[in-house]
Image 1 (cartoon, rainbow, N blue to C red):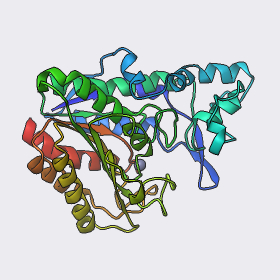
Image 2: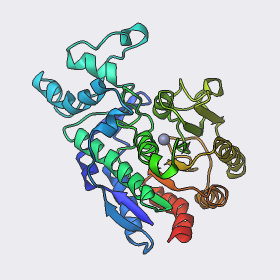
Image 3: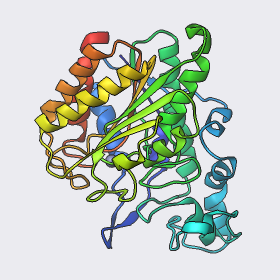
Length: 348
Ligand SMILES: [Zn+2]
């Protein structure tokens, strides 16, 4: 099975974040992708393939132009203004009508306008890493269009909290949406007409950014299983009451076990089948694991294999698996491999 990756992720290495009312080392570390990469190097079925570069036009189909320009210029502007050289962390956030007009010219104002939290930081190499994380997803999508049945894109930074015009939750460009839109646009000829793409988000946290973006697209359905926002980041989105024809939320309470999770997973798959997806993008987070500090579920390593086997048995369409979260580095690679092994066994 092809695994796409890019070494550029290492350029995004923020020193710290502000979370749960204290400053800690940045949880979304380069070590995360390195550990997964090293584990996959030991697996003969994993064909590690470097990401190719694509035109930026694909990014503009899922993100606002002004936001993408901000990501590219933010750090230089911040430094030119004599601000903290380690990186950009907003100290003020745009609420309500403050987002109805363009941001002020101040770098602090722009940070508060385009970023949703203080656990996400822009450093000197962020844009280069983000761009190649998007390319990693696009390269995976390209291989599906060339006939591969399943590809894993080892994206870093992750993407599902990045909205149409904002960064947050360690995310800057929405890799899953980028790939879904690419599959839809490029897959038209092969499908001889409209292409439906499903996105299954199984990261512990609600993919608020993906939900925001799919509202603006057609024939893409997002189905997300995540921690109830009454108890989990991003706190303000992910409720069932937000369900539309374009997104279906399955918020689950703290302490969910393997069996309880599997029932929700089965329902989620049936919704994607009803939709008639022709391609599936899986936003894979393993922060649903029982020993994950940033999550409150109680899933075992073994359940990831069961979920993958069920998905393979129920949905015989091309699948792109995109890496999202998972922060306990002692178990991260093992849990990712646990999910990927059935695909590797099935698709070689
Ligand atoms: Zn997460």
